[in-house]
Picture 1 (cartoon, rainbow, N blue to C red):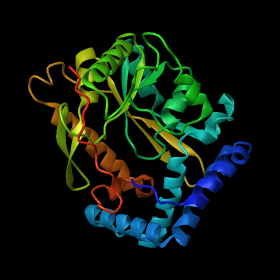
Picture 2 (cartoon, helix red, strand yellow):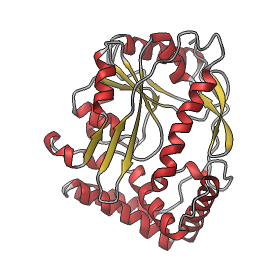
Picture 3 (cartoon, rainbow, N blue to C red):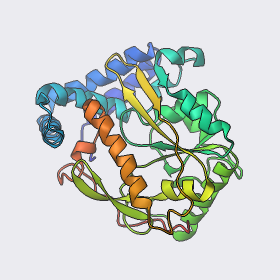
Picture 4 (tube, rainbow, N blue to C red):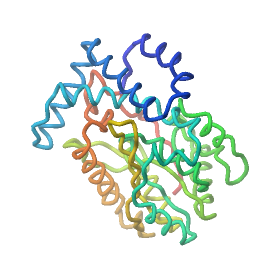
Length: 318
């Protein structure tokens, strides 16, 4: 989603982050959401954009959502979404339970105990960077396969410095990367999984070119990356979907869903589209239940707001 040229918001956040880190984390998250709600009320373009997005969502789901009420909640949560996991930096591990309530941990642990690695299937719903932060705090061996997040906590940034054959370095991808770099990244991700570790990547990445498939999301067709499907198929690692809901009280609900396997012949039989659609349908279910956590989904394909996926694709021999 294209960001508004709002220097006030950027300056406020830059000044407030050191102060917010000293506050109880749930209070800090509520303050960030309040900044987003103030933006909604002060900036007509943002207000119109959020209201229009809510209207599109309510029409698609056949729900009678209150545009202004949900629009201001959406703006507040988008501010929290942009803050990533920064406000979790100084939260002691034993106090994290007050900020991040976990459901379905047994699903993750059962999959992890198999020793086959885990494809942790994320998305851009809710607080999507809370999952890798929490997992790292809980001493799970996790690596991220995605474009490098621009703004994350100091704690997570330190995890990104891990080198070596199973380290994080070399796993961040770029839309403008060449064939060699892309192939090296995906093969490293496969090595990490075969070592029994967790690889976190999103299943809702719009992409063009090789290793993509069309998928329907919120009533519209897009091309989506199939990298997560192919990685799971080639390594035999179980797939564990994960979602993180931002609650109004400043806390989070981190949910791990039951794991499943991707057949190893999925590419040969052309079955990638089935699994991508399964992922998208699950995300839609969460968006329907928690529309204020939808972030920029309702803005997709809106020419005024949406930044289309690049035509450049990493060519990877998976």
